[in-house]
Image 1: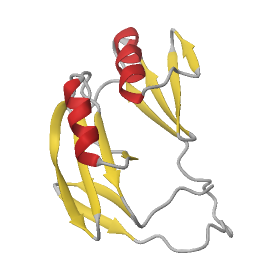
Image 2: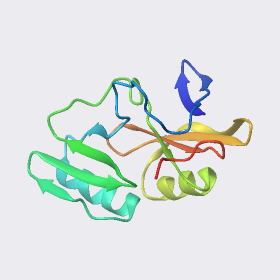
Image 3: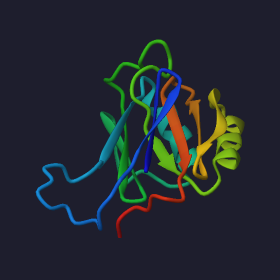
Image 4: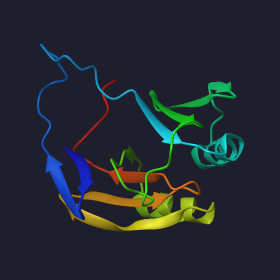
Length: 146
């Protein structure tokens, strides 16, 4: 299953199959781009929040490899208004409440509270110091492909 926040409601979508892509046209999510109007500050914040250094670091773009997926910082993008508007990407974690509290201690702001949406799936969101929404999810039913 995957979680998506839309207008205050959680929509769960069942994922089926053995990982065989069949005739699928899309390979899956690869890169998420966050607005970073102050790229230097954003790079510092995300390096600490993620606990890793960027794999790509230029004045026009910074990229982190997070579990095989890219989190990108782009100084030329505009932060959604109001803050947290638009699509929310949920990053898998082992303990949503612990990670939410850790990100809050680093300067993030609460966006949606930690809550259980059923089936053992727990979600919550924060806003980074730049206004981008960061979703966190623990989903015992969904595993990333090897």
